[in-house]
Structure formats: C-alpha cells, structure tokens
Length: 340
Image 1: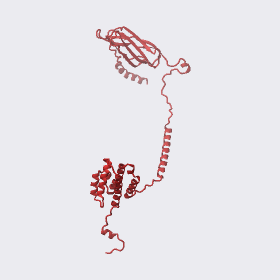
Image 2 (image 1 turned 90 degrees about the vertical axis):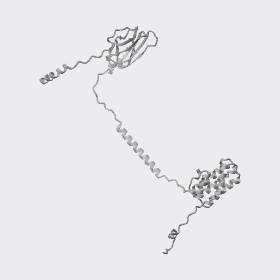
Image 3 (image 1 turned 180 degrees about the vertical axis):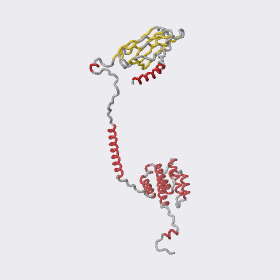
Image 4 (image 1 turned 30 degrees about the horizontal axis):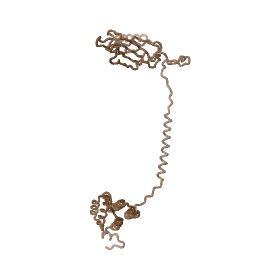
C-alpha cells in the first residue's frame, strides 16, 4: 500500500508544480494616481450599534471644491461585510464648497471587532486631472442579535449542522377524501333535482283556436271597449287595423302587419281571393291612415261602419274554399261494390 501511495504522489506532483498560480485580484484603476485630500471628510454608521446579519448604513460625506467629482471604486472583497446597495448624492449646483454623500448599505456576518477596508475614490478635475482619495479603514464591533443571557438559557448560536430529515405533516389524503365526499354530495343533489324535474307535471298546452274564432273574439273585445265614446278614435283605428291586417296575413300567407297600404293591396291582388271586398278594404285603409297618421277626425258613425267592415270581411273570406276532389279520387273512395 505504501508503494502504491508513493507512485501516485510521484505522478501527481509534476502536474501540481506546473499548475498556474491563481491570478491576484485586479487593483483599482486609481491605484497609480496621485493622492488628493478633500476639504472635509466625515464617516458615520446608522445605526451606531451594528448587529450580526442586520443591515446598516455606512455614510461618507466628502466636502471638496466644486470643480472636483468623486466616484467610489469599491474593492472586490469587503472581508466580513456584504454590500447590499449603494447610493451617491451629488452636490448642489453652484454651491461652493461642494458636498458629495455616499451611502453604503452593508451587513456583517461575523461577530467581534471587524475592520471595514479602505474605500478608494476616483477624483476627476478639469484643472488637476485624475487623482484619488482613499477613505481610511474603520473598525467597528458587531454584536449578536441574541440577548446576553442566551448562552445560559441554551439559545446561543450553534454551528452549521448536517442535513436532518424532518417529518412534514401532509393533508393530501384528507383533501382527497373531502373532495370525494363533496363529489358524492353534488351527485346526490343533482340526481334529486333531476328526479324532481322529471316527475314535475307538465303544464297543459291549450290548442290554438281557429283563425276566424280568434279574429271574431278580438273584434268583439274591441267593440265592448267602445273606444270612440271615450275620445280614443286613434287608438280604435290602430287596434282595428292590427286585427284586420293580422287576419289577412295569416289567412293568405304573407306579412301584412309590415306592409304599407299600397303593398297590402298589391299582395292581396296577387293572391286573387274570391269574394274579397276590395273596395271596402281600400276605403278602410285610406280612412285608417288619415286618422292614424294625418290626425283626421272621425265620427262615431264612421267608427261603427269600420268595425262592421271587419265583421263583413271575416264573413266573406271565411271559411276557405276547399277545392273539389278529382272525379277519379271520388270514385276510388266511394263505398259499395266497384263496377268494372
């Protein structure tokens, strides 16, 4: 075993000797520039007592001539501190001397007396050219967030422990059971509603009365209301016109309610109805249009004649004429023995 370990060491050692050394961290761009001192410099912590892991603000206030501009060049490694954010407040325009404020939001992840490293600044000026200013390092004490008696109470900080299995209570099975129970309840309610709807007695649908019966009932109702005696002549003609037009449209198969007066007469002439009182209808249509749209006056006698024409039209055009059966059909359907 010792011989094998010696051989492995001899094989690995040349490779380790030829491996490149890690590259040093790049120096700030202002490291070779001449130094400059500001007119004034202040640094303070907010809050003054820094606690482990809690953020604090490191504020740097630099007073300098107005023609100088200060830019912070943070080092890549802040040691025991972590940078959370940074902000720069530029000086007010035209104010002499100028004041530039930098605020670094940091947090410490170690206890005890810690040193915040130096912070270099690149200073640019039109008269003197680029220079640098280095804010001195600052030592501060980082306290624990635990109370002073934490160690005595057994609540002191512990080292990192290896992963440990933690049992987590799962409600998956319970949710599945509740979902199944809810589905059963919904199904039962739906079934009951379906049975209730299926067994519900259907409303009786009354058969539609024949056209002549419905038209005569409408004329009788209009006659019983006696609208002309109430001074409602226009309403009377509107109602009577709808009754007559509705009857004609259903009787001869066209939309008489949407026809103008001339379109109504043209449609009826195309139908060529037998025993149709065309002259009486033309007089009624003309008189009805004058009362409805021209605000013409109509006497009670004229209203009675118009209503009488409605009954006359119904009597002359109903019932529909049934065409006679062909002679062959009547012979074939006659009762008794057939004679060849």
